Image (cartoon, rainbow, N blue to C red; front, side):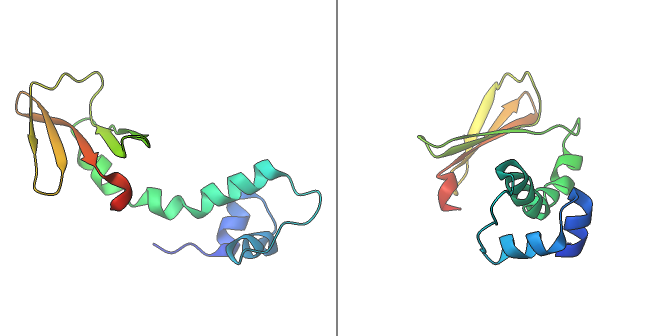
Length: 115
């Protein structure tokens, strides 16, 4: 999926030239609200979040919770809350798959920043 700078600007209500400035690293002019720049940056990353949708739809209840522990460099992904893992397995690529009975209830992704 591609999203144009113009479409993004229209969607979040900012001038298209401001999106272009951010994409190309041009410093924002005096008086530009820092909060609106954060909104624009988050919107620029929307394509990355949209890529998660097919995976979320495939989960049993359509739910997904994630949290990242920077100190441990671990990403926790949960498909059910609350979940109580009764078993787990470590894959060859350092992902722990957590099960509650036969159901996969979460993943623990080790060395997350290196992926």
